[in-house]
Image (cartoon, rainbow, N blue to C red; front, top):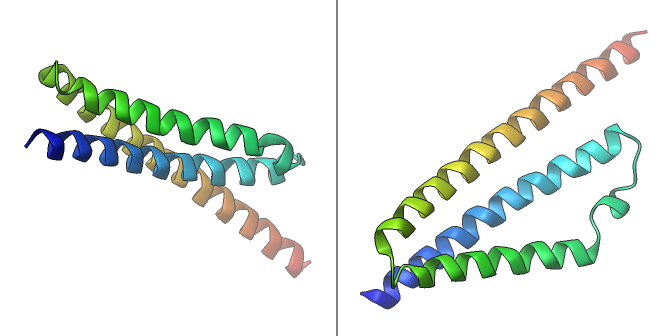
Amino acid sequence: MIPFTVSWILFTLASFFSITAIGVDRFLAFLAIHLHLSYKELVTRERVVVVVVLIWVFGASISLADLWIPVIVSAIVAITLATCFIATIIIYYKIYFAVQRHRNQIQVLLLQ
């Protein structure tokens, strides 16, 4: 039962953090275009590697901490999952409305 719990927490946290990181990446790509910046300057290979390693290290440390303090880890996992879920919703909400605004601007320009 213990290996199942540890691996469940590890893969759940890694998955939710990865989904959130993908949303942040898409938002940064859109932001770079909007602010006339280079996406390659914002998102470098080194930064991506650091984020991926941090995701897995955080997930592993929390899942291993479940062996010693399971009640606190359960609360941390619940708060972390809720935070990732809410952050992902907010990020995609902002991207959706920014794309809608740009689409409307393009349609206005095409009509002129």
